[in-house]
Length: 201
Image (cartoon, rainbow, N blue to C red; front, top):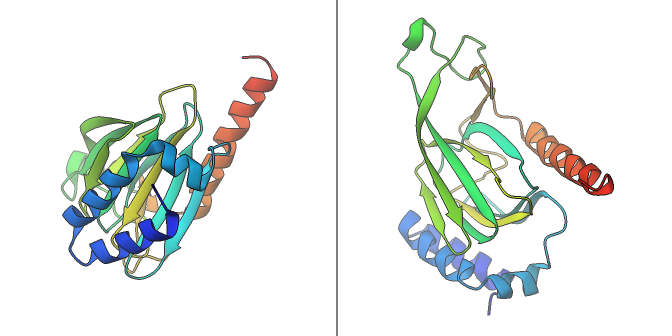
């Protein structure tokens, strides 16, 4: 049976062995969706809910509102993502060479598109994705219910030692990563969903 504190300790220990070891811990956890829900509660609110944060690792309970999307971003550390309810679609991006498309982009400079689409993947309940430290991805919940996931990062997600980036959805212009913007995205998506419910949509 899933236990939050045990899961966190298992993840912290697994981080010492690298991404593959963490993946095994997360894969086992999301293989018991009912156990996670029993321990963490039925997801009713979209958001980013830390279970553990430290310089060694970060463990987060993510709950995505229906149809919400999160703009392209990087982590500058490895990530392991396990879905225990719903579906998560990932679009992967790659940086263009410096000056690519005659522009290129770097953190903090609105100098033009600096990434291009490079692939996609869709995760369902019980599935796990592993992202290397240099991966850039955007995330979408494509279904009409909450999607819930456990994320484990190989470092301090909220206070990364190396500055992170995010990219505008439309222009693909690179900007400094902004956690406040991320939290606002979750709040706005939940607000739209609740407004739709209230309107009978």
